[in-house]
Image 1 (cartoon, rainbow, N blue to C red):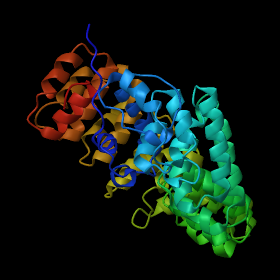
Image 2: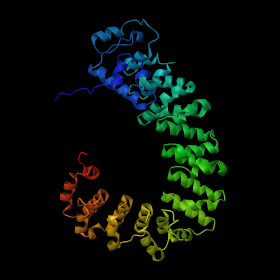
Image 3: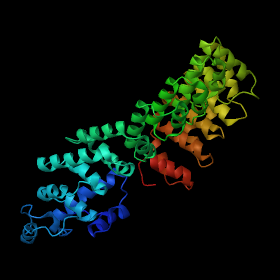
Image 4: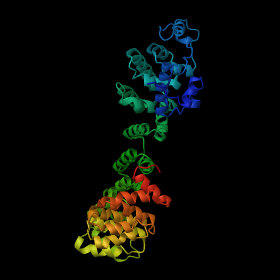
Length: 446
């Protein structure tokens, strides 16, 4: 069998044509650097790319073709290689060439990410020399150099002998001036941003308000969680509670709600009884109880007036109420005029493990997809008891797509012998939304 070398990435091919790296590669991407190393080594080894001349390497040994041996035996004619040729030499398949190239890497921040890669090289001489260059360069590296090198060091720390470079990076960040560390807070590489923020929090470089802002806005869950914990620990509620309580993500809002107790502002937790996050609702109930209020009574009062009732009040009532007392209220609210309130009531029935299939099954015909979705979830544990004929009827062409797809899934859970035939029929249905959902669930091309 013949094996073909995979084609070079277009950006990396441009590097082999001696284009400036910063113009063709995303230098802040760890993948860009590790791909450059791997693809250049393979391409030169396979002969897909000719080795560029490196006369500046001097007499570094022999290897490769006879022409390459002659080249390596030349006396150096240049002492300062350009960054592109230096990068290619650092990626060369020959360990002799990689080691010799490292002698020119000191003081060349543009190739420091490749030096970081060489610090985990399988060849000990290459590895040792790269570590020496790295240890010398990192303590004085500026923000731009760290932005390019840090993602690489953190990406390869899982490799054999990769932990040392990551430790050098962390040591640099612990002593770096704030103006060097700050740009890394906005780095798109998640691992880099996590490390920079963690070190900054340990160094107490953030004001409480800034911690709360990071907790509310950062796209990474781990960063949000760490920043929220630190913001609450700062014990400055006037500065932190506003951003925390207004955060988009549930865990951060939950941290803010919990902090209301320490601030003695228990009553402010009441609106969060109806939050979309179950964790936030649970925290709000706990804070209110700590302040002497009864969440169950508050939920019952809210559900008593359907006109002013918050949409998620029925689910909150089910989470902490009494089945015998509150079940009739939830059933009544399944007819609420607002779809979100109806779906909340059905979700509450599911939370109470209601198994009244005769009353639940008609809710599959609700015009709101959210209500049908919650009804299907409530029926799923009892799918084997559902009338097959009623489910099959709901997959017919006269029904809305959201009803048909949920009925099909219940038919599958029912174990019905008609499921396979029905699924094949719906996979070719004229409705594009339904067809897409069914084909995706069947693992077919959409």
